Image 1 (cartoon, rainbow, N blue to C red):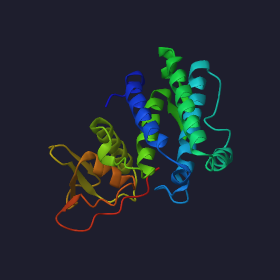
Image 2: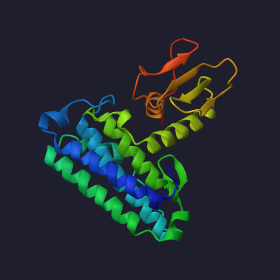
Image 3: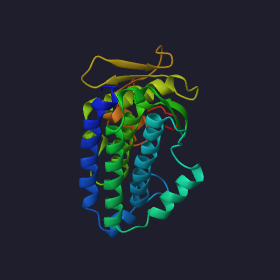
Amino acid sequence: MTSDPLLLTGAVGDATTGLLRTVAAFDAADVAAASLLPGWTRGHVLTHLARNADGFVNLLTAARTGEPIPMYASAEARSADIEAGAGRPPDDLLDDLRHSAQRFAAAVDAMPVEAWAATVQTRHGPSPATMLAWWRLREIEVHHVDLVAGYRPADWPEAFAQRLLHEVATGLADNPEAPAMVLRFDGFRHEIVVGEAAGAPTITGAASELAAWLIGRSAGEVLTVTPESPLPAPPEWI
């Protein structure tokens, strides 16, 4: 998948459309039901996605104007906003999600080419503005799965699944808690090696299933391990 933020906007739009379609079918009981994230209802996930879009708008504005605008006012304010919005009615959650996505799209459209070269201050430290479109896409696709509403990792576009897998595996390379393993795409010759390949198990499956397992969205039931053994335990993602 491309790293060009302007070329990624189509994928962000498609992912947003799919997410809104799912949420439009929710009633009050649905939004109050548990998500895949411990302690969070679907309402929490949807509110987080809306505030995440607004946080990225802040960073895009910072990149465009040069003003030192943080993604969120504070970690405490972020948590409070999510908690305050989680119990809203389904129509309010849907409207918030839709309008925040529109604000994100407008902020991307307002970016001059040179502004993408800026560095912005994210929750995890300084990062290039060019990553913002990918991070928004990642948020939508992963949290769509977290809603437990019929959208699964197998539904991720292949290009997205492969980029997510590469990103997560690259992060594991610098993590001393990561077990050594060889990740093999089912049906592909390509492999990703984490740690020392010698003696490491080979884990085979679709890119989407490998990525979902590594980020804790799947127990890896459909993956195979060679030589036969239990799946290793990857460290917590993000």
